Image (tube, rainbow, N blue to C red; front, side):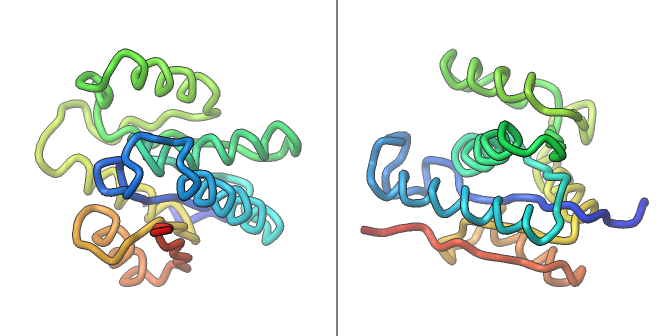
Length: 169
């Protein structure tokens, strides 16, 4: 395994765990996206130039878009899509799949973590992201699940972790 770079990875909830679900016009979602923009900019200001995104629906998508917005203004950023397995979006709606493919097309790098889906591929993707970064930014509400697993994994491996709470109001 290669040494971690001055890279930043992301973890966060899917829409099913967010109070606003898929309604990205909800003021709480807009506030979260603004906070993500700020965190990505702060990471950039702190020297992070490579960002790794797991490409899931919800917070991963918001993070990916935040990095791309910053990259439109400052050219020295790279964005890597950490894809758990081919067909990650195959069960999503047509609109969600289009958004995924549009984002994937704008990524500098695409890393497919494994060739076939199995029960552990999302955790392997999350470990890949942490293993290849020094900072994890996470949107977490304190509940169990993949985001909590990723935060705990990052802390065990002595990575810096910044947690953005899920806006409730």
